Length: 41
Image (tube, rainbow, N blue to C red; front, side, top):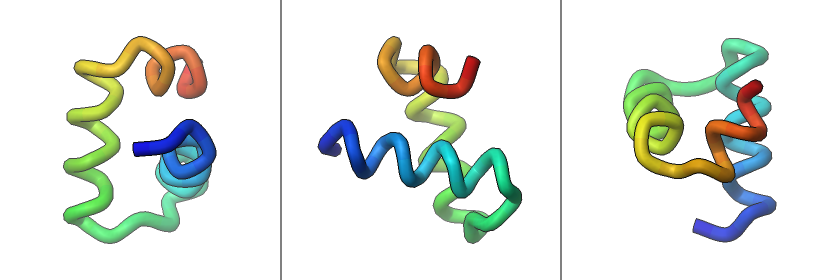
């Protein structure tokens, strides 16, 4: 996943605008990807 896609997905997650499958994807991403985790914080 490219950085822009990660940013958009995490942003949508924070806004509550993700589907259940996207929510699982973000949660996995946050658990395994340091860049995504940094965006979340």
